[in-house]
Image (cartoon, rainbow, N blue to C red; front, side, top):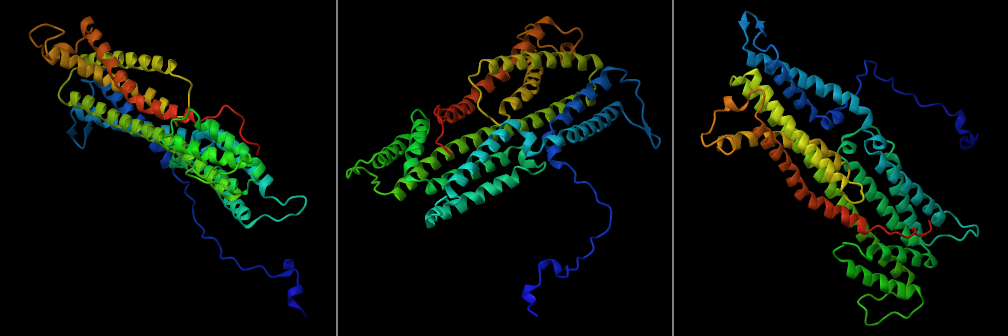
Length: 426
């Protein structure tokens, strides 16, 4: 009997090793706790102030016959609240760390680009009705593009991960999509390459790409060939074949895409640096608050310092909102704007308290004789010191506005490469 004729359905199934029995522990959302790490110290600071300000002297705690001092009690309570708040906020944030939810707008644009490129690949690479085979170069380009698109499709349906929290995963997806877009140019017929050239020409016209003039020169050489003119023998680049025209367009498209990806990556780095600074600022604020309690600060002094902090935070926060309302048309910044809005209250609050201390000790606000700290943080706070706190609370936003010039430059660069014309037919 011919064994090769036996259907696969009649073959004996392979024996499978039994799965190891035992409890399955759910994976912990570490990536979510990284994203909400800045919230824990806020709860710790609030706990220190509340415990000290309200009935702090009456709190007693005895462990194994040892009476703990109030500072130790406040510190333990603050650390417990810190950890609980951090843990709970991470659990609530975990469902929003998938590629579809961590950045909904960016995810939607990625999916649209993926669908567009996939449709273009099918139009260029699927067998024609006449059955004419693809050239070797076109077939290779189609397989290369298919590999990139399959990778993006698989990654975009993943679960929560740190790379979606910090945004790095989106940059990876865009880079793969751009490589697929460039690869498909190799399979594009000559009669469609002129549309591609026009699209890139419009993007380069007023762009901020450093080598824009050189790229425009390449496009002019490509257009000259595609429009049927004889190649210019005096030009730096001689385009005299379809392959050379496609290769030149690929180089131009790569430069444009790489400029946009690099600019977005720069915005992403600024956003992550802002969130890291916010975490360190909140930890520093907690250290100052706990240090004040350890040094014997009264409840009234803690509340007075809190008033100065809240005044500075409010001024800085509304100044930042005003700056955002006056900003030009928004460009995807991977959460940089939101990160700065979250960070400014902490920056402004610390600046306000520090400003009150520095100004008063210098004798500027309260007279020639520098007062002691015990006379500064009293209830109700001095009107003059509230004005000082408000003035210093506005200072961090002025600094952020200057630092924002770098991010605005990146955003303007991205916007300058956007074409108002319809993209080439896919």
